[in-house]
Image (cartoon, rainbow, N blue to C red):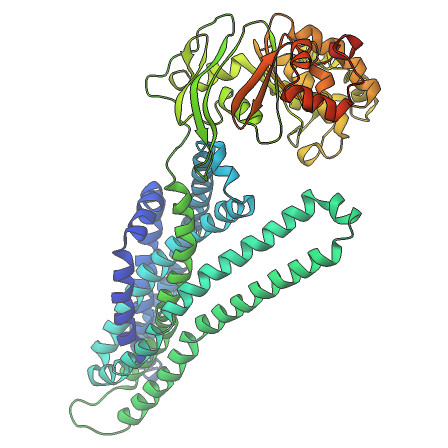
Length: 605
């Protein structure tokens, strides 16, 4: 049979693939974790392979029994044997299918969870530098590729190989010479298939990139639909999607053409092999005469070997495609954990809430220091406002205090304790944050507020919402606190989302508050209503405010003016206005000198 010699070459190619570190890791992560289930599947495959060979072997008895109708006992015996063989094969096939599905589904679930946990152990820099469409592609597509690769290895590499061994054994036993003729054409196929592997590998990588591009466009359309509509960008987005879809289609068709080659190739070569077998079997070469049963058994084994041989001929091309996607999964899993607790991390001890940046140096990915050397103390129980032009380092200070990033040099301390030496949980309990861009989870309003303190009762959540002046609009909704807010809170207005965020902060009841224009999305009446609430919750707490609208921080205990990551001046609003420095310039740009510190605007935060 033509396929079998080619299959031996494919088996060697598969062996080389199995020898790679990537494949060994996949087996360690997959098969070992489901060893029992795969053990059952492989045992069932052995039974299927043996019964397949037995089916071909028993054909000799069937034909001979049918030609010897006078021996009824033999006919009944052969018929019973056939029934037993196919019953055993059917049961074993069912067990194999269920076990493989169960193990494969468990592998996908396990790998997706591992990828998600790995992502959560990364710092914010990882997400800032990686497109969400890329992450989504790897968590879904690559995890499924891991299952498909393991199933390919187990099903084709184990069951089909065992089945072929059994069938070839029957062929050789029945007709050694004809078996040699059937096997000799195989190397031709291998020479052709070898040339396809490199092309498949490159195309698989390109196809994965194109799929990620489609996901990116869909995400941008969903998140930016208002901008798209307002600026009339529909045609542009359609063109982008059309190009991306066309590119995926072209690459998928190219891979399909390459993957389709092995089957017709093996079919054609098998046809030549079978034709040669027919011709040679018709020639009397001497030796023992061949019975009709023996010839039927040989031909049955030859034909039954066709399907597993065809699958084996495709295995390397399929494996190259799948392993390219599996590599993308391990690229994430191999990322070093960048934000971990120290092995000896301790609880952040209670204290007055002093926050200090001690000779901190920090830069993002480009290596340029955003903060070259900053020493700054936020006094406990006081409100400190950070002011400065865009890129001056205000948000970076927030990120460092929340330990979303670690400094490159120096230390960030709370009550004298280095944040790198304390547990995340104890640090998070001491800090609460309200930003300009309010993020809400796709769940109910109740759960979005409660996430700040999961053990809080419904009454405590409602009290926090009342304090944030959110209760009335919540109760006006059809489902009240059980209203689903939609993805990122899109079912609510910007002001409603921000009031829920403020309610979350009130419920948290943390000692250190970080407010990044906490009322930026509120209208004038809502802002006035919540002003007193913010004034109340900041009393006695260490409060750090990023101010873009200077009117909101005129009554802060201290204003620190940053520029290029350095302190250029600090003091009260009156002192800074009188000094005539950068703060005065920013102030005049906004108000033209018309508003004074004692105008009453400074009651805001």
